[in-house]
Amino acid sequence: MKLHLTTAENNNLITAYADEYIEVNKQRYAQDLIVMPETLIHDWPVSRFADITNVHFSQIADLKPEVVLLGTGAAHHFLHPKHYQCLTDKGIALECMTTAAACRTYNILMSEGRNVAAILMLALK
Image: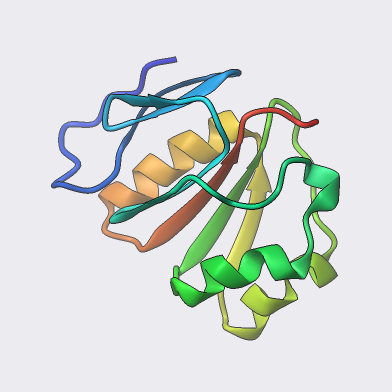
């Protein structure tokens, strides 16, 4: 699905997504990503949703987003709060949703000037 927004003001904008890719600023990526308005991270060290632990969120917590969106692939899955305690300890909210919903929500929050981080998993493995 292609997404349209009138302006990204030099920020990272999710311009399309499908089950096998995420497109940021019209650049296609075929791997899980972390997208923030001014940061794009290609090396989040998680390959399966079931493997996510609190340690994996420490890199994101250090970036100090207001909210983290976790796109869990095609299906909506929730994490136990112990898996993202480092975010909670710093007052950072986590919202779990499908990756498609996370892409749309990221663009809305980013366009409002929010410091949002979207972890986008292509598929549950």
